Length: 143
Ligand code: FES
Image (tube, rainbow, N blue to C red; front, side, top):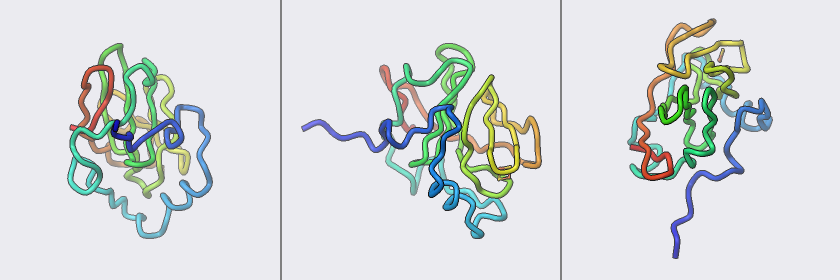
């Protein structure tokens, strides 16, 4: 029996700006006011090798925002796949979209580089933390 991927199209927020209210409310809970991010580098999120998305579903010059695990996957140039936490370091909201190589947080307008996660526009002061992802065949998986 084939293993079911933990992330599927239903919980991928693909550069459309559409986010369910429940996701935004949960991501902006008071407990994240100081930007406390989950450990997205491995332990505590999902096991290494967990399927995240197909490479073909990551737009070049854009990206995909996953809610579970909260990772944004970008592809600034064809074949260059990057992963970052999708939790904004400003106040803990889930980033919403990737447009023109900028990862955008809908809560207060912070923008981050899709290349290295650095801050392009505040109020966020810290870069998005790197998420360890690998390309395995035609898929992007957790490293
Ligand atoms: S939580 Fe992202 S800009 Fe404030």
